Length: 456
Image 1 (cartoon, rainbow, N blue to C red):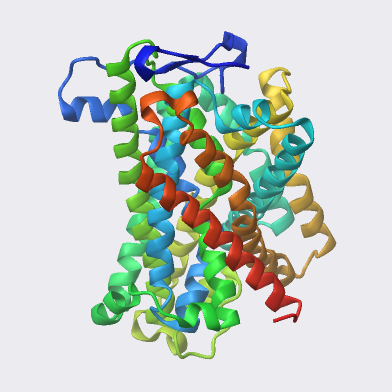
Image 2: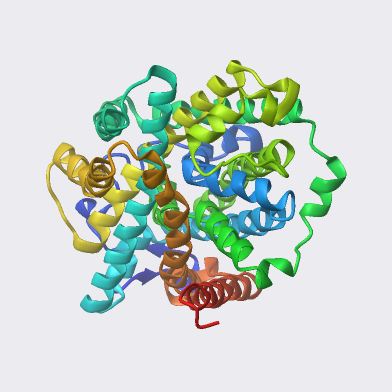
C-alpha cells in the first residue's frame, strides 16, 4: 500500500478506510483544542501516556527490581535509569508513528513485510503478550489471595474475566479508562513512597547507584537480572499500544500545524508519565536494597515480600501488617491496570497482523483468553506450588527483553523513513541512539543465552 505524502513533506494521509483504523471504536474520539494555551492543550492530550506507563510498572517489575536491590543493593539503579530513557525515546517514536501515518505499528509491519516475516513477528509479539500476562495475572491472583484468601486458580480466573470490565469501560468513553488507570497508578506510587520513606535508604548510595558499573556485564547473575529489569521496563507490547492510542485524539492530518501539535504534546504526555514509571521502578529497587540487602530472607515470591514486610526480624521496627496489606493493594492495582492495557495491546496486535475482524466483545474475549489460557494451565499443573508458578515471572521478563528488538527494529525503520513520515522522520541523533539501543540489546541477549547454555 502506498502512502500519500504531502508536498514538501508536510505530512501523511493514510489510504485506509474507516474499517482499517486502529481501535476503530475509539480512534479520533476525543476532541482537542486548536488555538488554546499550553496547559489546556496538554490536558487534552494527557491520558494515553498513563496507559503506556502502567506497562512499565506491572507486577513483572516487582520481583526483578526488588530482587535486584536485595542482591546488589543500589547498583542496578543505573539499569533502571537507562531503561527508562530508552523507553521514553521509543514511546515518543511510537506515538509519532501513529499520529503521522494514521496506522499502528502492527498494521505497518504487516503491510511492509513479506507474509512469512509478518507471521514470524506476529508469533513473537503474541508470545511477548503472553509473557506480560504471566506477570499481570499471577500478580493479581496472588494479591487477591493475600487480601481475601481467595485460592490462586480462582483469582487467576477472576482476572481473566476483567476483560468484561474493559468492555463496559469502553462504552463509558476512553477518558474514563484513562482516569481509572491514573487512579490505580497513584495508589501504587503513594504506597511505595510511603514504604521507602519508612525504610530510610541511603541517599548517597542511591545517587551512586545511578552510575553504571562494569559488573553488570561480567557477573552472569547480575546480567540476568539486568535483562529482566530491561524486559520489565521497556515493554514490546507498549510500542504497539502507543502507536494506536495516540490516535484517540481527533487530528486533521491534512493540517501540518495540527500534526506538529499532536506529536509535541503526545511526546510530553508520554515522557511525563514514563517519568512516574521510572520513579516507581526506582522505589521498588530501593525498597529491596534498604530492607532486604544482606538478609537471609528468600524474596523470590510475592508472598515472601508480603510476609517479610510484617516480620520485625527481617525489616526491623517498621514491620507491620499494614505494610503488608498496602503492598498487596498496590500489587492488585498494578495487575489490574496492566491487564487493561495488555488486553488493548492484544487486540491491536491481532487486528494489525492477521486482520481478524469479528464482533468487538468476541474479539476482546478471544484476545484475552489467547493470553490467559497458558497461564491458567500452568497454574493448574503446578497447583499448590506457588513457588514454581512465580518462577515464571523473572523468565517472562527476560523473554520480553529478547522479544524487544523484534518490535524496536520495525519501529526505528518506519519512523526513520522520510517517505513514510515526511518532515516528522527521526532526526539523525535519535535514529542512531535507537539503532544503538537495539544492537546492544541483541548483543546482550546473545551473550546471556551463550552463558546460560555454558558456551561462555
